[in-house]
Amino acid sequence: MFEELVGKRVLITGASRGIGAAIARCLGRYGVAVAVHYHASEAAAREVADDIVGTGGQAVLVRGDVSLGPDAVAVVERAAEQLGGLDVLINNAGDMLGRVRLEDMDDAQYDRVMDLNARSVVAASRAALSIFRRQGGGNIIHTSSIAARNGGGAGAGLYASAKGFVSTLTRNMAKELAADGIRVNAVAPGTIATDFHGRYSSDAQLEAARATIPMGRLGTADDCVGAYLFLATEALSAYVTGQVIEVNGGQLTP
Image (cartoon, rainbow, N blue to C red):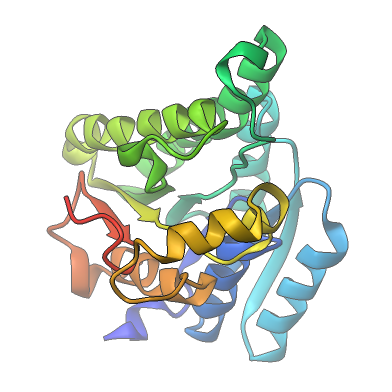
């Protein structure tokens, strides 16, 4: 059933590391033409692209700061130009940008977090919309987070709120765009052992999180990939839209 993926054109923002890189490598193995987006991590993005090409796939690199609306639009347009069109947009770029408690928040921190995690999703999706309409349909998959539902840990309020925005936007976009043949869904990873938590979470915080997970371990980037693969495959998910798929080992069971 994955034969349909061969030749599909997919842009993944934030694809140089973590979950984005794992998605890119997986889709590449299935014959997808992948636009690997990065901002500062060119070497890592090139390694992801090389891995895809090494398994017989096709990959192009697209650089840009998607926290800036015009850059996000340009990233989508360049990806579509290099791939000869676009079938799936995966809005994965995001970051906590530090644990900052309420009393320490300022306007600059608010703008940084919301621009990267929320504005980028709106800008990139809007840019893809015209492409998808010309083609007669498309598929958008956002990356949300368990923090969108549980509020996140100490100092993660802005990040959690931005991801709550993404989850809510997913549901609204699905309603607005269904008539255009565009499906919109999201994946909400739980506590995933990537360099994200390496930067922002202590060993004690991660152990406390692990203790709340019925499966008894933190997730990995590869644990998240199946949800994106499912949503990208029409044979599996053609009637699925407006959903946020939780991938968290049972840590949250809404």
